[in-house]
Image (cartoon, rainbow, N blue to C red; front, side, top):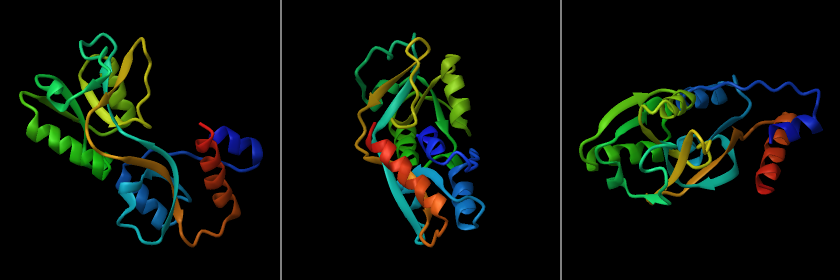
Length: 187
């Protein structure tokens, strides 16, 4: 998607940074970032922003490819009982994911829980066989020989998109958001 924008606007410099969701929102409001990628539920507290929908999704369990749950089509929360679970810490977790994690923590028996503060790190930990994690389908990256994404039967509709300030006047920022949205529609 970003490659398509760069082809149309080759002289525009793009700089990507990964921060926890609270810091990203502050960067946007403080004009330190022009655009952020985030879930829609994460910006309900921000009045002066415009949201560009990219994807809808659901929650997935990310498991090592050789794990006994990896061949399942869908998992119930109870299927996680007795497992090592890697949960994202609150600063890296949008509201719907935080609700899911709290539900898992309170309702699933016999869990060994560890907290992680980065999506890349949690993926590496799953690859290393250190546990299972949960994340939105539009974030989950499956590598069939190493990790598998299995749908989690959990009733939450998730939306992922781009956010800029409502008063954004830079035509390149608006063009970036529009090209990303067009690219997402074509996927």
